[in-house]
Image (cartoon, rainbow, N blue to C red; front, side, top):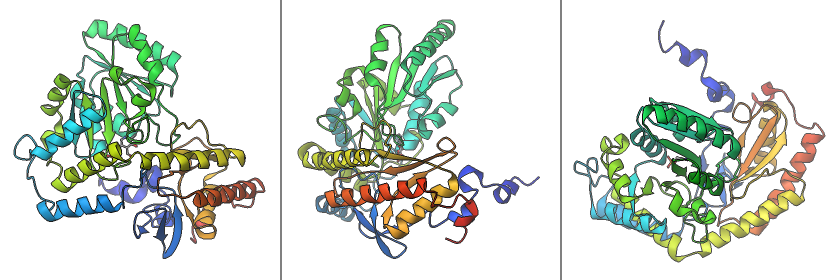
Length: 415
Ligand SMILES: Cc1ncc(COP(=O)(O)O)c(C=O)c1O
């Protein structure tokens, strides 16, 4: 059997409709300046699918800093992995400033958030240790755990009673193995927008001996009085032992970081395979991140504008009778009920007739029958954008309830 046979037989859960969906639903191209309005298929659309929370992606100060850094250093410098030949004063400066911003002793840069998280998990646990994690954990957490040779116990999403049960099991297990326990949650859950129950999780530290790792990809820059994250929002920074942030969202860049106690970060520096065996972040990314971090600290107006848009959008959608779940963050899911065929028709209607572009998730990513339209408000949206979108969503919901959308998956074939 040729191992490549599978490539034509079955492209997997996401790829199975590739012929019909590629270029429109999957791998769409958004063109023009990154903003609230961009070009899709030659036409201007209102965009709600970019994690450009603070609107920094195309901010003139950011563009200038990126351009100057690229002119000064190119994309190559520094060459090699940090440990070998890829170290620089600016990498270290960014780490010091990030650590201070999120209230930790030290931080270490990660080339990508995803790979970094995989590697943090891989290096901080060994076969004697037990991982306890939330059932809705991001793929990077699940993939980090795939490298773990020891036990892992899952608790249903945000179910603290069940977490306690898993911690009891984990404690028993580690008493036998001599290992420790790592609990992993997200700060903001990126699909549903609800928050990891950090306060309740941290409270369990009085009963159980564990360390807590928080993936705050969506919370860094958006949550907390200073935008320092979901643990700042809950006032539990000192009890979150490892804090993970990415530059790919609020910072509108690329890369990420892990922050915590100095001795732990030092250990990670010498053990994270994603950093030891991969080239250092290029200088424009580092200087660009320093600029963005400076703006996060000194220009709270971006975060304030974001939350003005978030509140207007979420309140308006609720008032219009739409179900936005339990979000407490900028991530705004709109739940509708129907099949995959209807989901694709709705997306098409929104894009072609309302010129609204948002991400859509249906089965198998969410339960059968749920259609999740995910809106990401940003500081560059306007209140007019919000009013227009609420009206459009209300109309779409009414049409869905009146069975105006085809349920037939084949109906998308002609798109
Ligand atoms: C919760 C979460 N963790 C980690 C990541 C990965 O971050 P990056 O895009 O920097 O690889 C993402 C991004 O999609 C995310 O949503």
